Structures are given as C-alpha cells and as structure tokens.
Length: 230
Image (cartoon, rainbow, N blue to C red; front, side, top):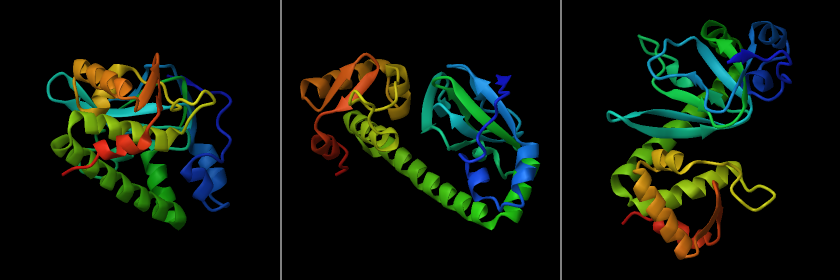
C-alpha cells in the first residue's frame, strides 16, 4: 500500500458528504489517502484497529476465516463504501474481518479517534452510520440464514441477484464486477467444485450466461424462485 499524492475529491465518502461545513477543514487535515494493487490486503483479521477506510475508487471484498482453511466473503464494497467499521467498539479493538482489493483501489483513511470525534460533532453522519449498521446487521443475518437453510443452487441464485443489484450491468450487459469462481464459492459458502457445477447447471438451464469471469442474468424470475425457502 502506497500513499496517493492526488488524494480524493472530498465529496465521495459519508464523512465528507455529511459533515457540517465547519468540520471539513479538519477532515482534510486528518485524512490520508492510499493506493492498493489488485490482491493487496488493506487489513487482515486479527490486526489491531487503527481507523476507518472509505473507498474512493475500485472494489474490495470483506472476508473472514471460516473453519480452518476456508474463507467466507461477508460483503463486497465499492466507491463510497466504508470498510474497517467492524473494528469499532468492543474491548480489544481488533479487526474481526479482512479487506482485500479485487482491482486497483484508492482509499481514504481516518484514524479512529478523529472519526469518533466526527460522530459526536456531526449528527447527520452519526444517524446515517447507525442506519448503515442496522442494514448490515440485517444483511448478515440473512446471509447466515441462507447458509443454513438454502440450497447451494439457491445461494448461487441469490448471490448473483445481489451482485446485480449492487453493481448493475456494464456496457456489454454483464454484471459490473469480475469475480473468480473461488471468490464466488467463498461468497456462497461452497466448494470450488460445487460452485463450478452449479454455474454450469444455471447456464444449461439458460438462467445465466458466462464469458470468462463475467456473468449476465438471462432469467431473473427463475433465479428468484430458486431463492425461496420452504
């Protein structure tokens, strides 16, 4: 990770957008900007918490250990999203997850003391962060429910629909994020081999089409039916 000399535009992240104008000079003074290469880790599970990161450009995966050698992707983050917030609170202050760049990424770093001071001063920021935590908690609960009660095929269908909702489609009509089959497997809580087989089944049933690491949805209604838990 190296410093980004250009910095950010001061308009993209929650902190810049929701701080009162009198607080903006303090934000500019305290923020630090960094660049990560594809595959580079921003922080890893168990690291001591130093602060909060806002993504200015690029996409990241947030993941954690699942069993001894497996990885479970908790969420994907893109421009404007916050990462590192799961390290807030508690007694020990260690990151409970890891964050890794899926492509070249630019981030803005805010140390924890200043971020907590910002929350006390900027009530709109505090309110939006509270809503974000509530939404993420609901998302995490759904994710764990799906792992327990939904078939692997249903979890794959649900994952593709969520990716479509978050990232939309690119100009070629594919979901606008390129993921390896291993990352897909880690997102749905399945083995690589099972993920490969399920993808081929969805292709054969003309629910999706695949070109390399790119996926498009051909029949959203059928995918939705696969996500139903009986």
